[in-house]
Length: 156
Image 1 (cartoon, rainbow, N blue to C red):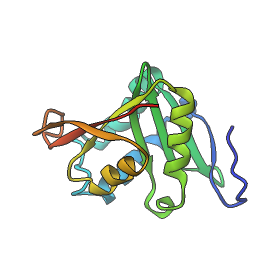
Image 2 (cartoon, one colour):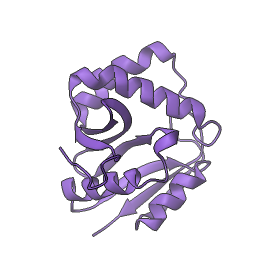
Image 3 (cartoon, rainbow, N blue to C red):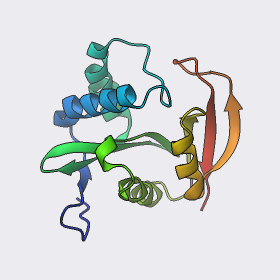
Image 4 (cartoon, rainbow, N blue to C red):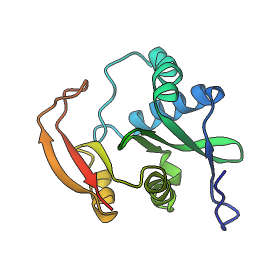
């Protein structure tokens, strides 16, 4: 468990299978509230919890941030170098949680990280650039959403 010195800051801990429903709800809410910067997933909402449980929690190292036992963000890492997911609820953005997650990601995968971000999500792209990620590849929608994206890489 990773605690901040700020008593109101989220607690960050490893996720468990019991977190699947909370992570699915957070994922859906962030994607819904952030549209069109983050396109909606092309699947029914009922598929999100099984996706979290059967794919994300099984294939990734997942960390969840909580405030008063409520998930407010999560980070998913996949060996050898992928930052697969980083989602933070809107009321908790701009408060340092994303930077905490990136520090954790760099500790867990210290040889480097790569991620994909939607080009339309300029806030995320700028955030990653501020934290040392460099855009290295662009596509015109080579993802399930069919939206232009950018691969970004961080090297130590």
